Amino acid sequence: MISQSFAMAATLMFVVLAQILTSVTSLSEADKITSLPGQPPVKFKQYSGYINVDENRHRALFYYFAEAESEPAYKPLVLWLNGGPGCSSVGAGAFVEHGPFKPSGNVLVRNEYSWNREANMLYVESPAGVGFSYSANESFYEFVNDEITARDNLVFLQRWFTRFPDYKSNDFFITGESYAGHYVPQLAQLIVQTKTKFNLKGIALGNPLLEFNTDRNSRAEFFWSHGLISDTTYNIFNTICNFSQIWRQYHSETSSVSVSCEEANKRVAREIGNFVNPYDVTLDVCVSSIDQQAQTLNQLQETAKVDVCLDDETSAYLNRKDVQEALHAKLVGIIKWSVCSEVLRYDYQNLEVPTIPILGELVKSGIQVLVYSGDQDSVVPLTGTRSLVNKLAEELGLNTTVPYRAWFTGRQVAGWTQVYGKTNMLSFATIRGAAHEAPFSQPERSLVLFKSLLQGKPLPDAAPTV
Image 1 (cartoon, one colour):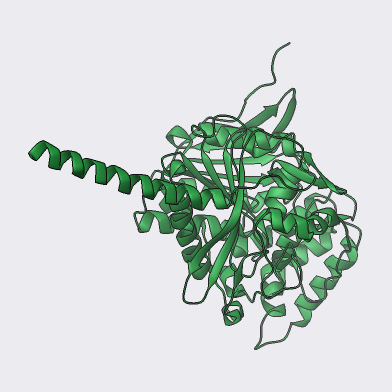
Image 2 (image 1 turned 180 degrees about the vertical axis):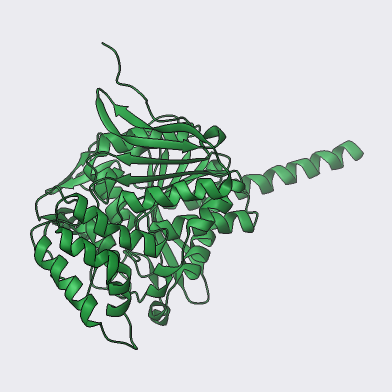
């Protein structure tokens, strides 16, 4: 009788477990992409759809997930977040920077330097109101801040892992660029604070906003050292009115712009002119719409706008009905998809909240931190970022383990790097010739840097011998 009861209980447990597994599998299978319109044949799987993060306000975040090209079960899982605030990780990160495909006319072409060669790549449009992500209660859009964004991103991850439990034990990294210098550390901090059981190994931040005054005011030196402004104008920014003062005065609701700051702003605009791309000072004026994610960081009230003349293909592709159907995406409260939100009202006071202390907390928690800079970006220049990372290392008492040196891709210098502490816990790198969106402008070099992050190894220190 005992053995018979035990057998019945075991059978019942097996049935329940099978039902649970079937339920979870069916959830992920419902998000599986059969094939994207115009897509070349591939062997890796793709998924996209919605994760509900607030049932009461009917708020859902849209994601796109591309499994690693080979051995996805053993490769790390990497979350990518674009900045803005309010710009699309799917449209910018996945379809312009380092996803498996890029739109070209009516078709998609393979990205030779896709990051899913090395990892399972997860892109989420966050916060709600960005891209295909939405809140049915549109009052949500009236005030969104970093705290709300971090909380929703954590709920998203918790529920995404429920839908894709096979990846919960994989090494996990959170990466992003620009205003993701806020999104990424704050999400990682929340994971640590809540003791959420993700296998978080590290974070990587590209041209990130970390400390408002330092990042803003390093622009003057960058402009001057690249010959974009005169000695006289550079001295004005050092002695009379700097870039952080100008930004605050233009965005203040209680005070007007001072005469000295007005004059400084006009001088720099006149000397630089309208024919230099601030996101890559070596390129001609045509810029990708991906650069819209840095507009908040760069925009001043009287600064002339630069016409966008590239990257219409991504917007056109994601606004096709057949593409939206293949992605299981829908337009809620908007008439078209756009790379940066036109409905979101973000609390721009959050720009002035420093996130560099959070990086210190993460390093102390054993989370690997990589900060990298495209060296042709004047919006968040490498000079400010490098000084912030170096100062953080000093505050943490971390010794330099890899002295400042060149690193290589193939036979070419790909940038410069410095590493602090054992096991690469804190590191800084530049990507030579890269813009604000480094993977877009220097894809091969960015992929080498990404691979080094995942492997926890220093960047290559020499060109290969013949």
